[in-house]
Image (cartoon, rainbow, N blue to C red; front, side, top):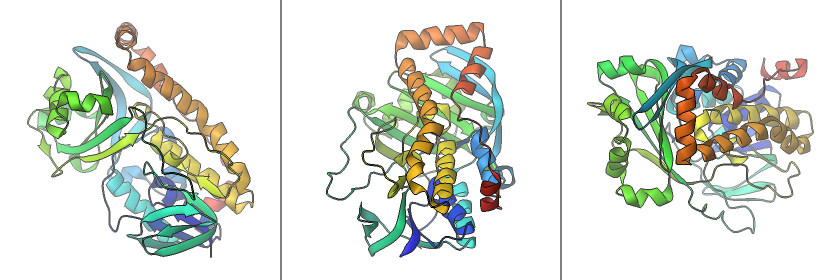
Length: 372
């Protein structure tokens, strides 16, 4: 039996496994995919996420991450731009996840790839390759639902969101217009983000309510037409070369923090398994990494039961503010009023970007030793 059984080799899972192994724990990490793959993600590394990666010994800039210093908000023909309150970076999950996983393996983590988790419970999991057990189970499977014991599978979210991601090679003029900027386009029942990542690629990630999908054609062609309703976004994507054969998609996205009853530290929920923040704030990857640091610290200290309260104290305010912002922008009159205010006072946009951040993170001496 492993000291820690980690489910999922995304940001949260690989980071937690790496930290635990560096702290002397025997760690087994299970990942359902057999090789590197793309995920639906905005691929926006906020200042907090960058700081955590550097604490892990990873420099995103050295991996070719694109700098992002400004935000441009679009709604129909309305447009407003302002500086971010920090410098962010754009880096694909395809690249970043593999680097983190390799760091975990180098730290001594045993990794099993191509293993699908079927059911969680009883101090371990039932998988496509048999049972696996651990004194502590860290659930870091991202947005994928997991059946737990005798409980029914998670219900489909009422009018939940559907996510799409596509990488593009933009035309040179569009690449120059997008450089150093994240573009956030607002629509009825959804929004889209466009930014540069490594290797001169642009990442387009969007979410829309499931109920909207049939009205725009129900497929990727309909989604592209929907995106074309915004003239500025349409111009940026004109003559763009899609770099995937088909978009990466995910359904049934339920934002917010679900109720976790009976949390006692037996199962530690990391990243999106703890709670899914609104994508438009760009702090999802930061929350995943923050949860990894907290979970590893608690397990190594022999106090896993304190983790649920600690992650809630760190991240609930961010998720709450992000959800308020997302829900407000779904109302046409609030969206229009907010854009007009931001046009009159662009620093308001900078202020809002700063209000939806995680609290600053300070490592204790003990924590510093764990990641050295």
